[in-house]
Length: 287
Image (cartoon, rainbow, N blue to C red; front, side, top):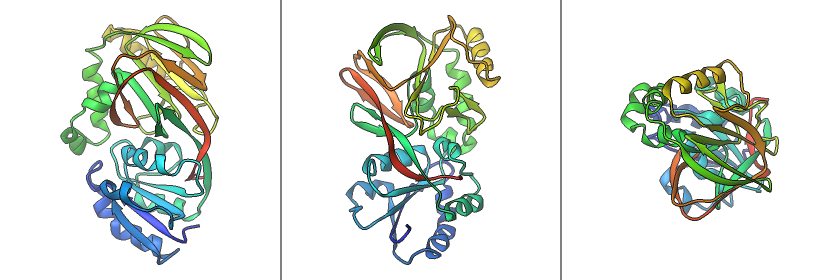
């Protein structure tokens, strides 16, 4: 492992930490191999991955999302060097925003097989969101993220909490039909939010072969705040305001739904098919 390393950089991610971390990453890689290459995330798709057994993502969840489709069901190992705004998958895997701590963990080369979503052919490792969740991810200005980091999403969450709107969703969940009016739906492979401070699922792990689904069914900002508080306190019960459950496959009848897939805005045409690809990506983890 780490015989030939590709380092994929996104120097615009988060607060542009990838630029400051570059020298330390080079020193780290040189401990294992002299065969490595840096490529910008915009050049990644044109890069021949054949020689590389290890790929490092220096960026945020969006950077990871662009790499994942190319390593599904391969022997290549992904390592995350968190340099983005959220870094949710890295946090779930025990990787720190502190570069020195992260490199120590990566140096141990502990590998975990994790699940991946397939959403109408798009592959992603973290989550897909509609409604309120999509608004926060897709409409938070980059300037705000550069200034406040991950706290920018918290600010946006408060703002969009006063703009909640219900939409009707028609779904087939593991073969069972369900119709629901919801202001927010999240399909999560790893259900952590705000690093690891909040989770939307019970015992949600990225290698359990299941997606965790959270549906918020309110538009009143006060009730929304109460429901969000219950999430923070770990109280997750199905009621008239919210639903929590797990599934393997979801189909959604769709008419030009906008969503985010691992932090990237997508306009999905036609019906939406979301399924789990079990243990399909090899990735470095804390333990």
